[in-house]
Image (cartoon, rainbow, N blue to C red; front, side, top):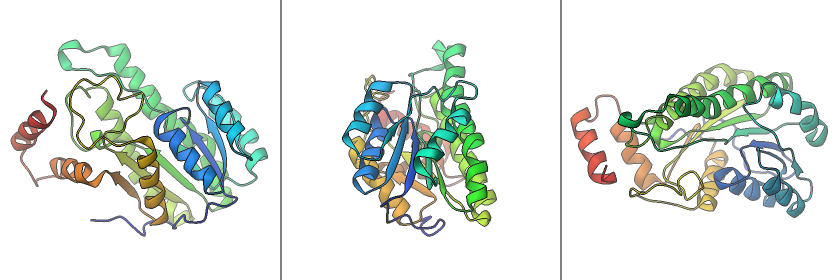
Length: 263
């Protein structure tokens, strides 16, 4: 079922203030580009300064704000600069992510915990930084980038998948708390997107799309007021079915995933 209409519809981006964390490449950068072209004033953050500075040079009103989302106090410390540049924060998006293929017979605890810190811990740090601002404004939107890997455990996603399931659950709780306070909350669940994170995959990636197409789907979802923005539908709907409680047996889901990925 569609989640359209659960949030205020974000259609006119002219003059809107946006902060994207994880905007140096992939979905984050493509979304920043699309919003800037649509007229938004965009602050871009990530650890790599070069791509951020290139983005700011291409778009009037943009600001490059390099930082490490996992460093204690980095995001909270950046808020005054973000506010000074934007005036009002209309959208905060957490798109930073980490993915290393991992299977149980080669479990790497340090690497697994790194997934947790970047994918989930960074989102918590952004929320801690921006929610006080948004609650005072009584307007604005928080968007967390999760994944269809959070619907159902996937081969090679031993460390990655659980962090994305956590983000989806976090967004669901946030929506219930924040929507009555006038704020919007969305969770973005992409399938396979051609980004640096997926570049090392050797297994088949069904329905692979470009970051630019992912950005178009995200903006379309925001315009529809969707809570859960998942795409491409030909793949994400299958993953939702596989993850549906009681809709398909675990035996059947595991078999279908093995046939699809070859793993």
